Image (cartoon, rainbow, N blue to C red; front, side):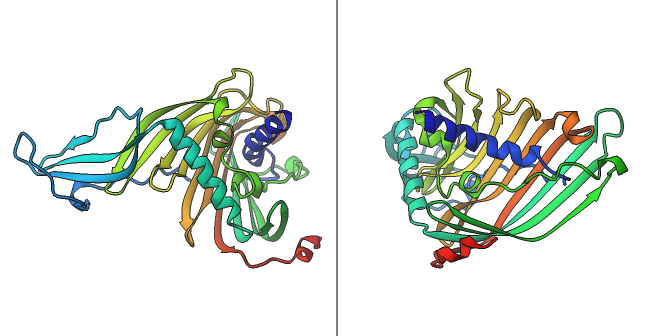
Length: 320
């Protein structure tokens, strides 16, 4: 239990540290919401149905699973027709456990992976002056990862620009890389699925598709003392995969470095039939002593050019 607690805290802090420690920093765009549900006009008629009380046709959408706690209803009416959703009812706990098992299978199926990591950090605003002041730090890496924990990061380039005083040129040059094993979940799964009993869950929203349902599931730590995140993740019940996450820290995990961690967003996409994290965003309020008066730090990391299972040689990771 002690090791698991340490792992979860390390995972949660890894995202925050990426935004907290940098020699310079760029303002990422806002997080994108999950994809919108299909419009009625674009839907797929899976089976003919009866007509509703107004004489409109009823389409039957058969989905793999509906949460037993889903109270949104199975019939949705539009101007010209009605959609009725049919699916096996299983509990939210069952959905979470199936998602956890699915994440583990997907992780274990990847022996090694290579990808490009683009990091952009912006220190923004001045506590005592210009709110538009900013300093930008960007770095691009090619990353090699092999299970269980071998990793090599080769820097392809970096640049600094923006507002910077002469006295700030000796600022601490700390690491801004995001740990692949934590941020991308190649070695460990989403913490809120790996330790289900440590969180409370509730269904907050639902998106219907002809062959699947997306649930927005809210989560919060059961303990008021652990500095763990809370937020919402979107889960696809056809593949039992997490596709989008939005989190924040109610309790500050790094009070000596940060005033608060206000937003963490992770987006996932399917790449070569594998679901991977392709974007991470973090926004945090900084302690002025560590960032020379800048008010906030905003970090955006994009991951692309994935190549899976090349058979990477162990000797590659001995490079310095």
